[in-house]
Image 1: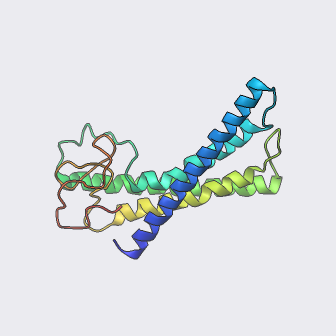
Image 2: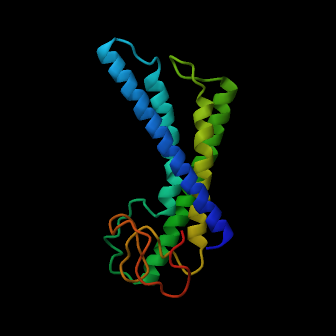
Image 3: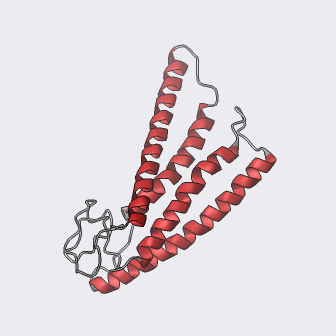
Length: 194
């Protein structure tokens, strides 16, 4: 794995950890608010707004890790019997298409964040600035785009690391497992990254 791929891997892991921390904080805040509401009548003002904002950012923060692990749902009903080479080409095409979609989403989220900043839009109760959420979403979307591009253009095909593998160096996602070991490498690439 070269330095660029290692950097993408490290960033994806960091973003996933940040997403986990955000979700843990949302859970704790919701518990405190519900316990307070049901026992003393006290609640955290704006808890629903904060939960929605943090959940949106957390979902975006998980995207790079999901793409890195090839954790997106794939429907391989028609390609299950295709050759390993055909499956690698289709995986590369899928990664390229995802990169295009993520690039578009990154661009539009950036534009939305700039508009929210210029208009000073915020949440209804707390006035929590919307642009902050957008700022939390753009970097992971960009990273997901870069990871998908790296997967689309990696040498040796897209023999993925997302599944346990099918014995051909071609693990294809959660429906076949979720471990790093993915069958035999065909010797034409690293067979694992990303």
